Image (cartoon, rainbow, N blue to C red; front, top):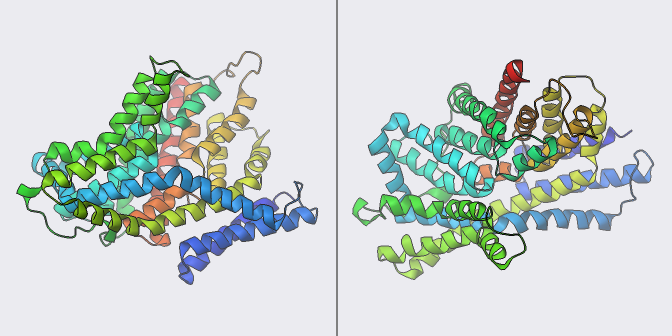
Length: 461
């Protein structure tokens, strides 16, 4: 009766959606109640002998939820909060408006969307997704405001570019792990990945929005400018665009420097400390204090007032992300990934489709992109690789298999994914509208990615 794993997860997520959408219960509370329901149902199932597993107690369930809540916030809280502070300083200092106006003046409205897609792609390659999104979101809002168009029409292609680049390409951790798992050639993943990314972004960014109906959402309260800043009092375009790019510059520099540094040395330790996401975003925030604040003849008290406003605005989002982490940890501890893998083992099907499908199912269940990709890689590699030589079976291209698995990890996500809540909270959407926008753009990314893999496999795999 191991199918009960799936039943309890479906019931738990269903409870969360009903409580939040129908009864308007705060998302954090709804998530924690869903996690508790799944955990208690698993505990009863194990005690009754319906499913195998270690004996669970209410105390161990509480520990699991606290671990998930704490570990999620431990890795994301500083990034999300400090990123929100940078975004608020950009808006209130006029830097975001300066970037938006310059892009519109120099490129015209026709090319503004393309410029944001390029920014999203670069950010997705250079940073962890949460950092990239936090940096990109204020630019989207500012450009949309200046262009007098719904911000979601710019957000969908720009975020699609960010998630696609983050999922497909080295040096991001997921693709790096997949290249190693499949013994693939990194260069070939770029050769295949570039046309896959172009097609994915084109379909998701330009075609999908035409089928989504009205995208005219209210401008997020977090990104509303407190007062209009005259053009002559704004930071220059160079300062405005380079300051939020500081995390990317630091992290790219650290990655390049690691080529020549030896692990375990003092220099390696210092470079990777500075190049870590929390430290890089902290340095950028401190720079923003000066460049967007005191350098513009604003008192430091103005900087701190802006800091306080940003923290207050983002605090609810942070707590919801933590509750999502608690739900995710409960689900992972149910062993759902292993169960799904066991179901798919031995099924005779196209290896690219299997890699994608297993990854999608585990991503939906756990909300973890890298976890889903690596679980799927372990299952697929056992089926298509010779354990002695590490070589793929004839007709299977390792780099295409990386792309198929990566496309599966970049798919529809929901309430157990921190990125879902980040998108919802930052853009001020309801759960329903987040599923419509974030959910469908991710699903479209994934389906187009798989389609391109299958198309390429006709010629090379």
